[in-house]
Image (tube, rainbow, N blue to C red; front, side):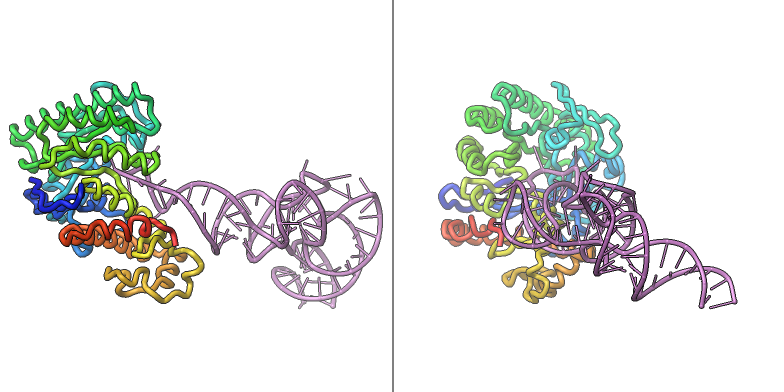
Length: 376
RNA sequence: GGGAGAAUUCCAGAGCGGCCAAAUGGGGCAGACUGUAAAUCUGUUGUCUUCGACUUCGGUGGUUCGAAUCCACCUUCUCCCA
């Protein structure tokens, strides 16, 4: 359950209690789509790098190894050896990202598997059943993430359908818990706000789902191509209508600057593939801006990736060595890079919490909001 | 000693008279990435200030309106026979 500790303006410092531990917020969840952090990291690496919540994906795990197998293995926690909170994404984002391979109806969505093309049907009930089998701490409602830009009429219809799907999610989760078949009987459910970039749709939808007494509220469908000013505008429009006694999660966001700006607008929880994916591609976050470790200028640079960082990579190795590992295509380079970026993001959120505790978040914001997103 | 073949832009390797500054890989340089179909994708890679111009395909001559492509010789390398 969410407990607000302190506010600075709209920004919130709080904590979120779950059966798998308490999350200090604002927090960043580390993405482990297929129950592993891409780049070769395990749950133990996440622990070492101050990760609070691991995020896994319903769709991917349903395909492989299948949620029945995960259930047979005792659930995600036992399988991955991660003992903290796990949030499972519902598969809703794949409605968006697999857009060329899908068909949406009131019942749900028919996908083509990205692995072998076979047809898969997933609706609210299927998503809830899969997430129950996975045994995550937090299940996300099955929603439609509408692409941007979108027609108003389509956004409205989609939004209303997502609201109906949410009720079905809630009903199905209740049914599963009552049946005694859930891997985690205390599994929480978060609802997801949609409405594209239309403030009235967003607000109306938010008011509607706020009445459903869910365990947390997410803002979805942002950072999908719209300018960041649009994203901030929507967050600020929706925020006053989000229950203040519930945790708020901005899905799929974002850059360090996006996170700082969104915390300022009242968001508590984030996730993003950016730190891990960009790390695999050689883009590393530092407290002075973003570097591309593959650039020739680092060939003889013996300084660490970031002098302020105390991750395994920065404590032990030079930029020159990291560049070499990337150019030589050595797995170690990628692993160290992912460790560094996740450590950076988790530290970023720690510093944000510290600033909120000290009442100095505004200064922190002004110093870092642009700096951290700058390519150097 | 005799014979056969080959030399192409950073590398490998196409090209075999004009559509060639020269395919395709690799390498190099750079860019993108926001609830992960992503260890992926894109651009660029002779010189000059863009259109365009200029100098390139071992070397030197030659044939031709035109040569990386044909001819002669030279150089180097590979292979075969002694």
